[in-house]
Image (cartoon, rainbow, N blue to C red):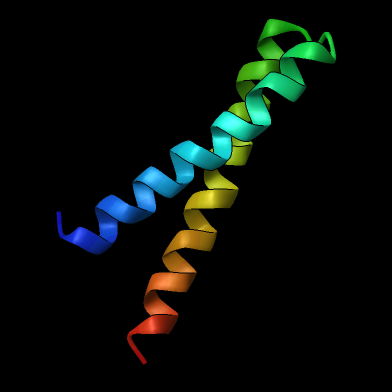
Length: 57
């Protein structure tokens, strides 16, 4: 794991920290909450991968 990957993982964690409190306050069921968390993680992971790959060209 290189420095770029670590920065990307930290960025994903920071973005999720911003999203989770809002979802918790909305009263979403726990099963749906897990589904939404995985969806957000996937979105941010894809965005991070795209940004890292694009920066290499």
